[in-house]
Picture 1 (cartoon, rainbow, N blue to C red):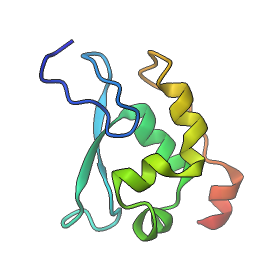
Picture 2 (picture 1 turned 30 degrees about the horizontal axis):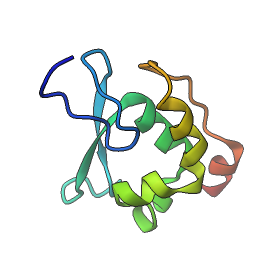
Picture 3 (picture 1 turned 90 degrees about the horizontal axis):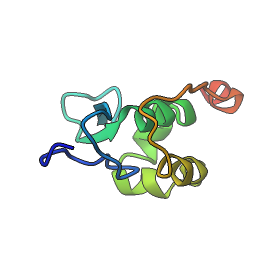
Length: 98
């Protein structure tokens, strides 16, 4: 594990083999958006659970994302795994809100 590896801002996992991505906390406003470093599985899960409008209006900080009811069972699970990728499907509920 790299000593300078930054942990995922959501699940707290880190490691050389865990792909990390930059999540724009205010989607569609990338130039002025703050960025959080998250692992690829968490990033995929965020975009499967929340619409961009929801991210912009309500879930635009790491703290609100981490505390979101929709994220709790996922975070509880992912923290116990070594998975570096997950198969994510956008729920019908999210599709209807888009």
